[in-house]
Image (cartoon, rainbow, N blue to C red; front, side, top):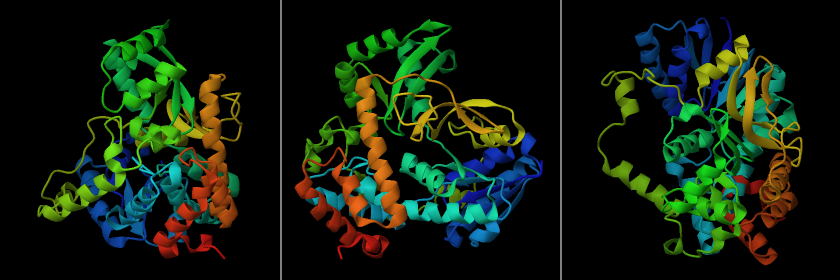
Length: 436
């Protein structure tokens, strides 16, 4: 099969596994895989490690790398993206978390919502907007498979402002499905999960096993058991709203005012930790370790190359096969709603079950979300809609409006001082949003 697959942000360690999945999908033999990144050194490290995988499995893939975006995109059929704006050692992300803490906003994640999530969106969406415009010129029929956050906002920005078909991938539903199976003492593949909502605040609205509704039993078990790490806050939401939120506590809590219960890191509840602290611990661990990373060892031929023994939740090999050959696959993805959830906007990018095939990704009908779930989802959808336009237009007023509508903000008086502090800390990366 002669198709061109571009990897955007190919210096990300994630792409070693992506290339391995492409290489071990026999139907993709003959494809050209082009790596693109602005960081040539990191990209070359992944390229060398991935080349060993291709050689090991004797895959007929042509792997090349370039720092020229036009060359990478020219004639592409598919583009897989994993781009980040955290900065070296995640120091730019840490800047956001540290500034927010001065205002009593303690982030546990900060990549999707809250002032740190909005900062990330304002920095990464313009990059994706430029990519979308380049795609219109060099590969207008391409399908973009995005892995970057804020997921919903990025996908919406590319679709709204460039018209490029975009599908977003996240593994949270797959992760919680394994947990549900464990609680019910069944195999994961026996469960039929129905869930929908904006990325990182997806709602479980149906669960069946062999045609039988097992959602009531799952709810009973979650509420009767001792709360487990990662699902302590989610259990609280279920107890009050009678809908289980998928995504994990560290993501989920930031969608609610509960995130402001802690004004200092040591006050965080639900067993969660301050994002700035975990970044710092990661940095110290890297500095203290004198050992090369596994990726570096594989690139040098000192460890065996990656050969997948399982399909990842994102399953990029299977996704490209389905899109290229029309071998339809049902998968959880982030795509425009298109009526699948009637009480949310058709244009809103939601995470839900879809049929992935040569047509792209077609959402499977879910039905209305319960009103208590729709209420919180709508707030997030419209915050991100303001964020998308603010980032593309470089509009300070819309950025302030997005932050003012964010659930982590307690009052309008703190919005502008906090926003200006983030803008100052990020310097040239957010210069267009400075007060004039």
